Image 1 (tube, one colour):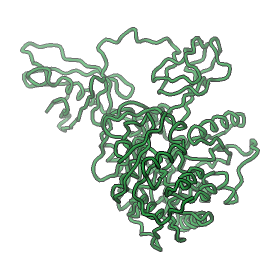
Image 2 (cartoon, helix red, strand yellow; image 1 turned 120 degrees about the vertical axis):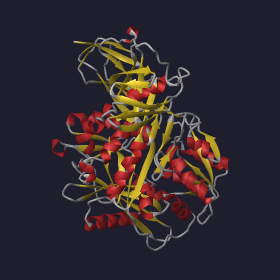
Image 3 (cartoon, one colour; image 1 turned 180 degrees about the vertical axis):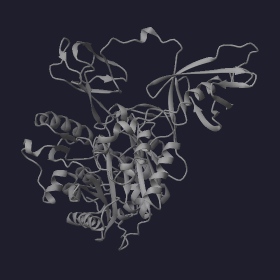
Image 4 (cartoon, one colour; image 1 turned 90 degrees about the vertical axis):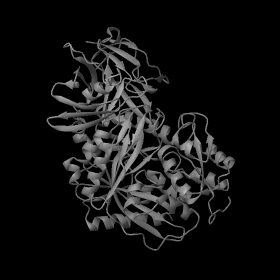
Length: 625
């Protein structure tokens, strides 16, 4: 193995994709370092592949075929002339064998020593190191418990079990999901702390014995055990508890002779007691909030540490408060179903940070995590940071698949969150109210007026001397149908109770009760989708097609994906109960349970194991009893 410590880096290959690869490339460009991207076939035209100085193809589309193939990535680095490899986060970032393979090829590994990864990357070994034993034999008295993947993170391979009878099936599902996401199917069981807060400490260590503790982060807002919102510093912690967490994190880092960036995670129980969860031996998705508060670039510091440069004896001082929201292509109101399709436009107001792996016109596929971007706000106080981020998300332009934007805005303004009384059960308690967004009642009229613009030389349709019936258009918005009426007159376009000040294809100005409001309208190609400010509408035909009706009990795929499991013994003629699991689809690295829509007899089953399914495909038909 060649010792390359102290080497000045010239070219970095990032063994990752999407947002994190783009973020690392940005720092590399600022430092004058050339970049190399690896990409799957599904990512051939992805943003991270387009912005890199050089790219290497990894044949295939799934993670197991591509980004989890360490030998292919090392080969790519050598072929591209890279002298260093940054693992990003996820995939192989906490794989000690991959780190050793990088070093064995004479390349600089931008991460902790393989021995530290081995000690901490497996959650079971990390707990043993901290003197904590997993549950070996679960009884009723131990419930509820949490099944977790030993390798990796991001909520994959994690299940809460409240009934002992459910444990075997949840272990099976967790193993399959962990193997698919991380290439390691090991899982373990631990007690599940109800009502706890998820708090972590960012650490940074050099090769000269200096370890920085860079404050706390609160990551309690989670869905499916995957973080949605993160902030720094964690609000509401006593100085004593914050200091205790910092000391524990530094002690864990020193125990394994850690180098580089890492995160030590804790669960804080309602009684204020800290429970060690794990140490992530890599950069975290939420690292930008720490960068904002401390005024540093963690990736730049990772690179300098890898080159052998020492850290200052003390970290910089913290300043203000930062909060990050993860913008996902998913529908929170329908079991967080991931969404696919073309992202026509994504833009946020100035003053906030946008980290993304997508740009206008990119396609969101089925193979990877559904996170579109991270939006980060920094301000002198927490209240100002919350207001700044909520306003930026509300004003952002996001045209494409359904996102969790409304959920994020409503979360940031929820009293339980603004007063820092949240915990990991926040969405379990409040999801219906957070997704019950009130649609803009004037958005359908704005869409209709924009569509009408340009149909005649009068710019908005022709008027008539004789009275005529009003024009009518129908739209679907927020699950409801809306019918709007407007009329062309000598004075221009008019609508009941609304004065039309201006209307063209991209902008409509309406005056309601003396107040003028602007509506920005966008439509792409021949799509029926219309985007009006933050609302998404679907133009409906005047007369619905009778042929589009489906038989009662039809079960349609809520997303594209692969059929990875079918309920044992399921066959045509079987009696099923509403809500009973029939099959499982894998999409965006997560398994999604598909259940019977009603109680009755299974009269058709079109899904087969391993089959690729398109969204809205007919999976099965259950004839209601």
